[in-house]
Image 1 (cartoon, rainbow, N blue to C red):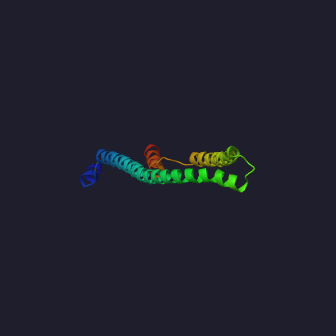
Image 2 (image 1 turned 60 degrees about the horizontal axis):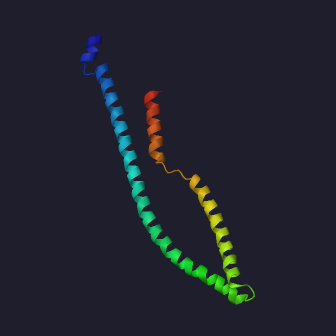
Length: 135
């Protein structure tokens, strides 16, 4: 009777296990492809943004230098009793303090940033957990 069930078109246990293993291998391959694709996309987008930001920073640096040269001269014109070197020192100290604060805030924000492709990693973890501990 058990032979009749196997011959009635139902696959054997060996065939089922092979199919399951093949499906698991396909799933892992798909996960790796998704992971690679996500990383390549992130790298490409990061490169494009970095190029735009570098151009913007260059322009801002030149403009900022001219502005910073103007400020002590303006301060000396407004308060002629302060020597020119003192005006440059005052403006330099203020710029240094603001730069330090911005650097501190930037470092804190960078530490909270997660550069890994989290969606692919989480999907891969779920699949690994499912394959090692099926319910």
